[in-house]
Length: 88
Image: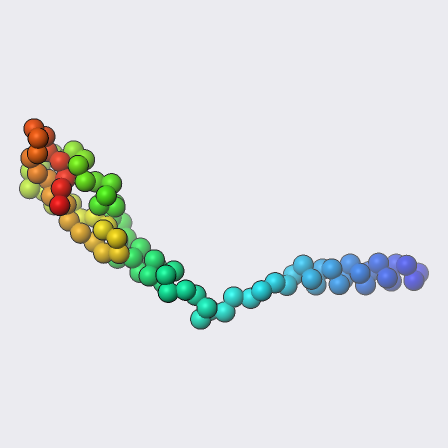
């Protein structure tokens, strides 16, 4: 009987230890993660400008909104070296 009581007490203690852990405070969030979230919101739904530069486009003068860092920018379809490409 004593052994089962000891085993139960040990298992209960271990289960309490497993449930704990450091609790992150909400105000402990870094500014860089907040900046990252803001840039994601500003660029929501737009492709990265760097992924479009020098890519083929079809209508000269066409503007393409894109994400440039933490803000949106625009690339334009221009004729360069015998083909139409997106450029700043």
